[in-house]
Length: 221
Length: 221
DNA sequence: TAAAATTTTTAGATTTATCTAAATTTATAA
DNA sequence: TTATAAATTTAGATAAATCTAAAAATTTTA
Image (cartoon, rainbow over all chains, first blue to last red; front, side, top):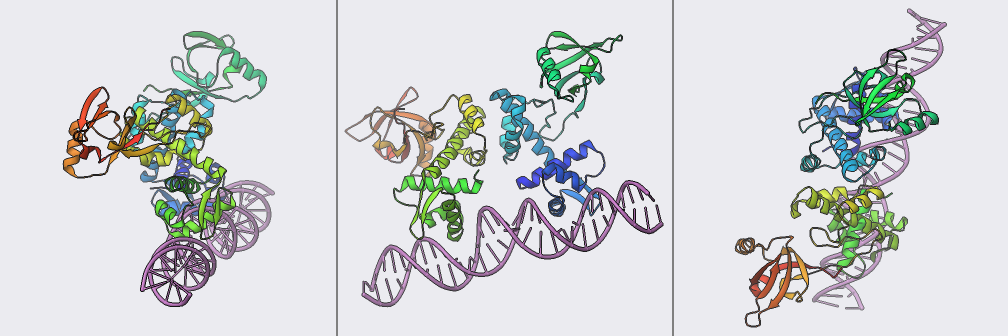
């Protein structure tokens, strides 16, 4: 088995290699792990010895198949626990990350399968991110701004790119909060405002607002 | 916060000091922790520094109030997670211990309270052991043989003191398996056989059988 | 393309929890 | 009550994950 620390390194490397297609740099990992570059180098040697990453000095790393499978298992657990915390224990979307960071390291394959079953085999976590199945397969997720969303597609609000109070208060009034599922029904040519459906409610938001709402695009599952 | 290891030491010390009223010996802890006496001594110094135990060289240890409260919190989490695994995820009674050993170290007070609520504030875990409430209070549990049970009291079968196949097969046939709740309704003077109620079913078991069934006596809660 | 800046690695320590082997203390028993 | 046995502690090492400071490699830029 792998230590919590090793699992966290693999997870960070996995996420970084998704963002950026090439190899992952030492400093990027140090940043993600809240540690120093020297510590990362030490750990990279260890992960390479265990054949979890391919590592060439000074050139950055990539995950091996084994390393990738391990990272995806941890991500699967993290996202399933988030669903549990939100759906069953009534936590808010924004409260669950740190707890799931601990729960994701519980080592019991059967527990993961039972939990998945108990939750009804969810395909997405509360942020709209895809949950890998037991074989590690999942639909990729795409995060874009609301005004870039194609019509007809649904998405989940995952954040904002303007953190000013007036903007946040405006969103609160409209009900456009994190975790809400929306569908674009049209774009007004005249002013670029966006028509959308939230639950069953029709809304119109200005182009300026749409440009500052981050959405996780739901692929057809 | 305390490390997993520190929490495990406190838990073992707590359990050992329940069994045996005096101070807890180094070797007993080493045995419980599957480690060596020298390692225990090192850890005892550390726990004493943190004022979690009172430790006198060569004389054994007792938990301080702080240490006891910490141990009880870990035990509360362990038992709540066991209820979750059995009631919600459909694990069997005998499968949950190792998983709960990991889950008990998840550090989130709010998670524990939400879980307790979700489970309906259970008073006993699947073995019949009491679950401390958020303040650490609980009814003590008493483990005795079936033939020593007072009439009218209920208990949960927690094990057997005869592991022979014929005996276990006999119990299986009667439905007297681990986790089953029973109530003594009478004792036959003539042969010492025990009349009991299992769910709503009336049963009679011989004195010999009753002497080999271990029961956790349920206090009036 | 050579100097400067940045990134990465090495060297040598530190902390936590563990170990073995030896020394010390306490308990037991002749 | 002293010798022997058992339990416990100390001393000195080891492995995991981290650190700082210095050295080496790579990238940028003038």
